[in-house]
Length: 238
Image 1 (cartoon, rainbow, N blue to C red):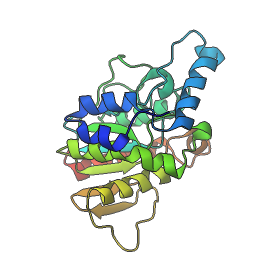
Image 2 (image 1 turned 30 degrees about the vertical axis):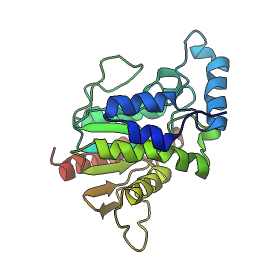
Image 3 (image 1 turned 180 degrees about the horizontal axis):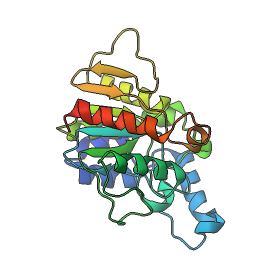
Image 4 (image 1 turned 60 degrees about the horizontal axis):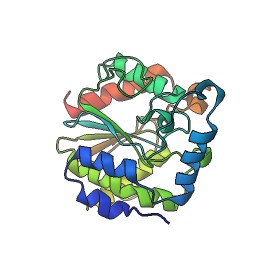
C-alpha cells in the first residue's frame, strides 16, 4: 500500500531541498511506482549496464529562480534513469540546447546528474514527478501529484514567470495557481504556443513541449523555443 501523502509531505517541506527529498520518496500512485520500477528492471539495450533512479524526480535549478518551466513527466529512460528532470533523452537535449542559446543554462546538453549543468535564474519541474506509461498520467495521478508543484511555487519566492511546456503543463500551472488562491481569468485561458496570461503575480507563457513528436515534425523548432525563453527572460527582468 502507498505510504506517502503528497499533500502532507509537500506541506511539511521547509525548503526546496526537503521538498526534493519528499518527491523522491513518494509512492502515492501505485500504477506509476510499478511502471517506473519495471522500466528500471527491463531497461533498454543502450542503457542495460546503468542503474536507474526509479523514484520521483524533483525539480532542478536555481533556488532564486525568476522563471519556472513545467513539463509533463519524466521519461521512462530519461529522467527516470538519470534522476534529473529533462536529462538523458531527446526532449532534454532539445530543451538544454535552447536554454544555453539564450543564456539560461551553462551548457547545451545534460546527460546525467552531476555533469556540471547549471541554470541561472530558472528552475525546471514537471506536472507529474514519476514516469507514466505511454507518457500519459491519469487525471487522478496529476491531481495527486499537484501539491508538490504548489509547494514549489510557494518556496520560489522570486518567481515571476511560469513557462508550461505543453497543454498538460499549462493546465497544471493554472490548477496550481488556483490551489494557491489566485482568481482564474474567465474564460479559462487556452493553451497555445507563445500564449501569455497574467494570473495574480505571475505571467504564464506557453510553449509546445520539446517532445520528439513536436520537434521531428517541425511543430516546435529551436528558434520558436528560444523566442519563448527570451520572452520569459524579458518578463522576468533577467
